[in-house]
Structures are given as C-alpha cells and as structure tokens.
Amino acid sequence: MDRPVRLIFAVSCFLCIAAGCRNKNVSEQQDPIVLGYSQLGDESSWRTQNTFSIKSAAKRSGIKILFEDAMQNPANQIKALRSFIAYKVDVIAFSPLVETGWDTVLEEAKAAGIPVILVDRMIETSDDSLYTAALCSDFALEGRRAGEFLVRKFAGRTTPVNIVELAGTAFSTPAIGRSEGFREVLSAHPKFVICFSEDGDFMQSKGREIMQKVLKLYRSDEIDVLYSHNDDMTFGVIEVMKEAGLAPGKDIVIISVDATQRSIDYLREGTINCVIECNPNSGQQVMELATRIVSGENVPKRTYIQETTFDEFGDLDSIANRGY
Ligand code: GZL
Image 1 (spheres, helix red, strand yellow):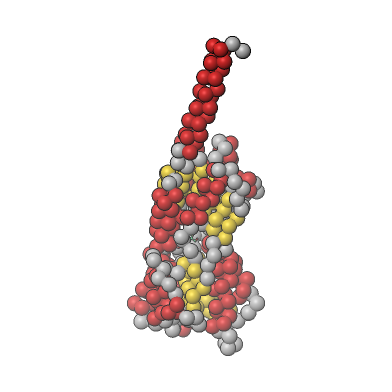
Image 2 (image 1 turned 45 degrees about the horizontal axis):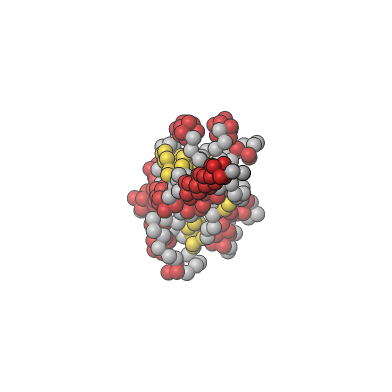
C-alpha cells in the first residue's frame, strides 16, 4: 500500500476511533431517565408522605420526573398516562386509584414500548405483561394483623364482639385486602360480628361523617371495636367520639392502619389500641426499579414493602419517630 493511501487509511481509523470515544463519552453523559408519575391524589397524610418520598428520591437519583396529581379521579390518571406516552418518557409509574379500567391505556404504553411500574396499589388485568413491576404493601396481611390483634385482645370474651369497619376507597387494593384479610382471621372466631361497614375514602372528613351516622344507628355500648382502614379516617372518628363524651381506646377499641406519628402518639396515650403499619416511603425503591428497567435489567414482577404492627401489648417506647 503506497504512502498516501496508508496515510488516508490511518487518518480514517483515527477518526472512527475518536468518534467511538466521543460516542463513549456521550454515553457516559447520557440524558437523565425521564419518569412519568401519576399520583392518585392527596387524600391523606400517608399520601402526602408518599408523594414527598417519590419526588425526593427522583431528585436524589438524578431522574427527571413528570409528576401529575389526579385528585382522586381515574380519568385524570388515564389522561396523565397518555401525556407521558406522547412525551415518550422512558418509564411510567402510577398508583391506580382503583383496580379496574387500565387495560386500554396500558396497551397503548406497551405498544409505545414504555415500561410501567405499579406503585402502592395493583390493577386487575388478564394480561400482566401490561406492567413490568409492582411495588406495594401486602394489604391482606395488614388485614390479618388487625384480626390477630382482636383475637388476642378479646381472648377471654365469650359474648359477641360487635365491630364497625370504616373501609378505604371502594375497589381499591388496600380496601379489598384489608377487608379480606381481617375477615379471614375473624371467620375462625364466631364471636366477632362486623355489624356495620362503609367506605370512607381514606378521608378524615368522611371518617367524621360515618362515625356520626354510626352513633345515631347504635348505642355506644353496642359497639366494641372500630376498625379503620387508615389513620385519617380514625382521626375523624376520635373527634366524634370525644364530642359524644366517649373515651376512644377504652369505651370502644380502635384499630387503625398507616402508623403516622399522630396515630403512634394516640397509641401511647391509649386512645388507639393497635396501629398496623403501611409504609409510604417507597420512593427510593421506585427509582431503583425504574433505573434497572431502563438499563434493561430483569426485575421482580412483584415486590412487597416490609411492614409491622404496633399495639398496646408491645414496647411503645421503642417505636422510632415516624417522620410524618
Ligand atoms: C395504602 C394507601 C392508602 C393508605 C391511605 O398503600 O394506598 O391510601 O393506607 C391512603 O392512608 O389514602
């Protein structure tokens, strides 16, 4: 090969290598992951903390988050998911308000090649390829834990134990699981009777309304237990009980779910008897899942968040500050 040709060949090789390096340098400074996140609303202290956890973890992870609050309306969530698809985000995550009605929009995300992470709540679908990963609590376990506390609390009782249940948003995964798990445990003990149950939408205002209705339907001495699917509804119940001259936690046993700091404070003073933890701080796990999925890693289809129970039989001084 004569000299000029060798020179051109050498220069061409150099340019290709340089381009490759440049590409390598570009790949090292690749654009941040873009995550579209549809949050179902801001109905409770738990949700507010969950949103804080998601947003702060995105910031720490260097992930660009497009965050939409659906204000408790599934139609708003569907609109948000469609906007994320149009924007061509790298990954979508959302907390479905209720379990049904998601297949069509998730099929659109799948067709667009955008992976979906379910956070906090599940969907009901015949095609679980519509989501890549789900990160949520084991709500049936939470319900069973509430039932197990009652079995212990009323171990010596032989007469009926009348229970009022304030349920969460109808057809939502936590409401379904907390009801089913609770009933599964109590079904082995006929003395437990759920005499009233109503959907309070996880909201303090509805907790108040329902408890006012209950005290018109029943004498207070006809109610032994109040089982509330979240702290915010419990706080409404406690207000109404006190206004009616009742001693919550003594006249009526109270079980609540979430474990906000306020509920732990009530537990320590005997106003609430049992608090089932539901951990809202899933942000870091969401960002780790999103990063792994976008980088092409295989991830677990379902990840359960670890939780516990705090009750009057335990060491209440050892409970760490909840932070929300
Ligand atoms: C549970 C979550 C529930 C909380 C409520 O994971 O979906 O919704 O228990 C919240 O406080 O409103």
